[in-house]
Amino acid sequence: MMPAIFTIDVEDWFHILEVAGTPPLEDWDRLPSRVEANFRRFLNLCDTAGVKVTCFFLGWVAARFPHLVREAAARGHEIASHGYAHRLIYHQSPAEFFEDARRTRLLLEDLGGAPVQGYRGAGFSVTEETPWFFEELVNAGYEYDSTLFPAPRGHGGLKGGRYAPYRIETPSGPLVEFPITVTEIWGKPRCFFGGGYLRLFPYALVRRMAQMVLEEGRPVIFYAHPREIDPDHPRLAMNLHRRFKSYVGLRGMEGKIRKIFRDFPITGFACFRAEYGDSIQ
Ligand SMILES: [Zn+2]
Image (cartoon, rainbow, N blue to C red; front, side, top):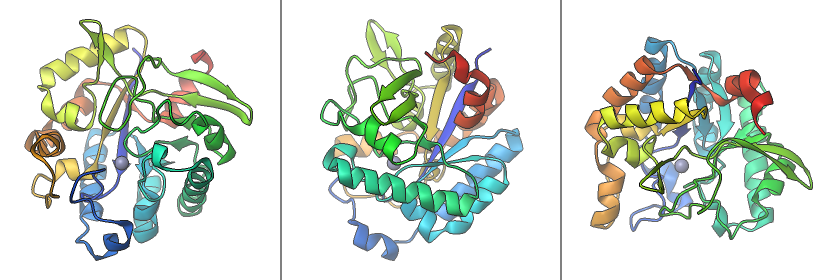
């Protein structure tokens, strides 16, 4: 059976995008960080289940806690990039995006001691407004991306996007895109496999939907954040709608992740590409 790809976006509890209480970059150093303890708990969950995953590190986290990158690499996980400052892609110019992505790759390669191949942008924020995205990513030295969200969502999302992994030829060279996994329910693409979607839906439904995707011959891409296995982390100020999406289901998340690790063959992107890369069209 096609494996599931599990990914962790390594960022802190105050990196929720575009809510009233999101602090500016200048304040991040002063906030009580919880990413170190939470990410280590996540690595322990992986070790207990014997799984290796892909860790998309925020460059800011890597710079502040460089030992976390070294530890994840030493424990056999793939190190990949979540950009440096967690800015939405469509809020950056191509030049700003290139610099942020390149800087983060160089930092992570220095810390992890291995080439960094993969990128995931903050908030899955590739839209019709960012046609330069893939080319700039190749220019910044990346081989694959997992940012596209082929369904409508808060921060962009790309309507009509492809569902299965695919190759892109850019003027600067090739790239492989792994869109965030969706499956069609009543003709509409829906995600069940990460963040608020994974926290909201009952596990039996998540498992059934994941099995359906795997039976279609697509990998399922799960994603989670260290704060999501820490139900008591501080809350940011935000409206009711966003509060629900940001904090629903925190108490059940760790248990769901344990079940995902139990019920599916789990791998990271680099291992998946080594085994199945040739079949991606
Ligand atoms: Zn993020």
